[in-house]
Length: 196
Image (cartoon, rainbow, N blue to C red):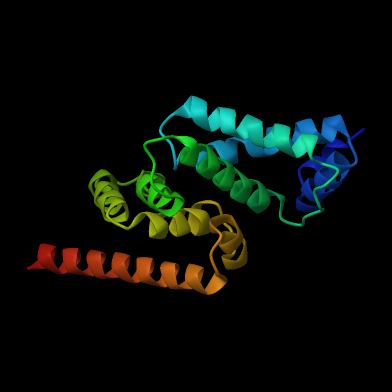
């Protein structure tokens, strides 16, 4: 039986993974409960079809349970699940006749909706500011949006982002730097045009 105090700590998630690998059904259920929402939010960035996202997450957990004897232990359960979901969605998308390639698909489909309103809700002018920031973020290329989402909204490190997106850590750094530079440039140029 899994203790509830273990479930909510970072080491508890790793313990749940280990227990699940050993066939503990309760640990598996707790893993699904803990990670479903994050996976759903992440998967929703690639598909606007909520049923497809939910089905793919269920398929992922079913695959994990059925293949638990061949899986290895991991210290990064959430990034492992996110990367696995991304790959599984890719495979399903490739089987769809109207798709070209994985990179084109994910690059064009990733749609992060950044809710910056939460940071400015107290100010009357925050609606205008947050709308402007949202449009600036929406103008970023899809891979840059995904890196920003994983870094600042999911709190993942550069190495974990590289695992999720299946790119090198240096590419993650480059994408982050370019995105932040573009955001700063756009915000500065908009600010100057407002003053002038």
